Image (cartoon, rainbow, N blue to C red; front, top):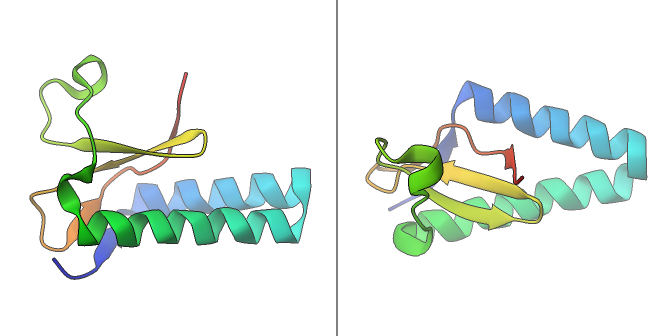
Length: 92
């Protein structure tokens, strides 16, 4: 697999996360959050099967989940490149 793409909803989620951390913690923390997400996306694109299934959240969908801090990255491992279609969901 080479690379990844973010669905529009995932991009919107990242903007919202960045804006939240800018307001609550400042530029350095907001920037680090985005860096951490990009590192997670790159890891998933290199090792697409790394995630786990969540029958309670997506029993009927072919997606995997990968934790990133208090968020879950939701992605389709069968995509080429890996598609993060709605990547940021806060864990309960």
